[in-house]
Length: 118
Ligand SMILES: [Zn+2]
Ligand SMILES: [Zn+2]
Image 1: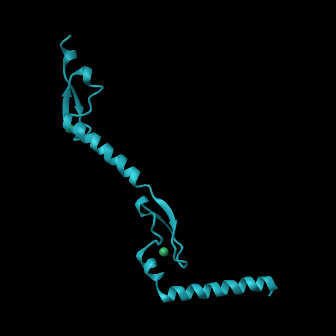
Image 2: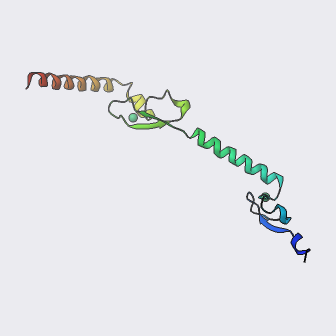
Image 3: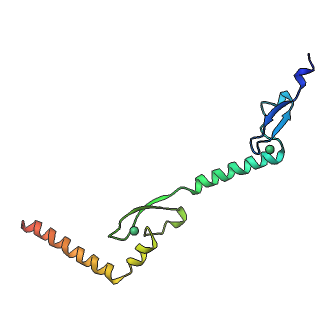
């Protein structure tokens, strides 16, 4: 039955899921129904690779002294100092500066008290 061995093998395309036929000697290598689907697979892999590379994040700490939240930014946003726009605008307010001064005063007092053992 030499004839039977030449019967095409049915495979499922990795890209579109369509059933396609290849000659038995190609069955191990064939993964796609067409060149188009093979190209699509390459494109998707590239996309995946790109996504992985660009999803790399840089760990940061919010510059808002009353937030100090850990957050992550994209490499191109490395200059970002605040976790959110709210923190950014808050850091520009008078209230924020006053709170900072107030806090520093308390801190100073505390360290002074330590020195004097009060
Ligand atoms: Zn296909
Ligand atoms: Zn924040």
